Image (cartoon, rainbow, N blue to C red; front, top):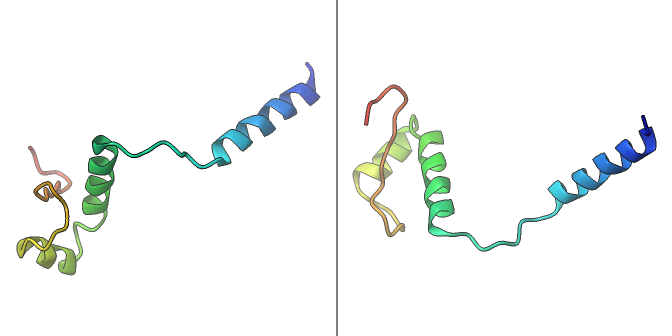
Length: 71
C-alpha cells in the first residue's frame, strides 16, 4: 500500500471540494433552495404570517411542505 499516494489523493479531493462552484444556478437549483428555506422556517410564526399575506419576491407561488403532510 502506497500511503503517500493515498494521502496525496485525499489532499487533491479536499482541494476539489473546497473550491467554489462557479456554475450558474438554474431554475431547479433556485426552486430547491427555496423549498429548503421554507421547510427550515415552517415552524416560525413570523414565516407563517409572511406566507399568509403573500409577501414574496419569488416568481413562483410559495408552497409549504409540512412534515407528515401528504401531497
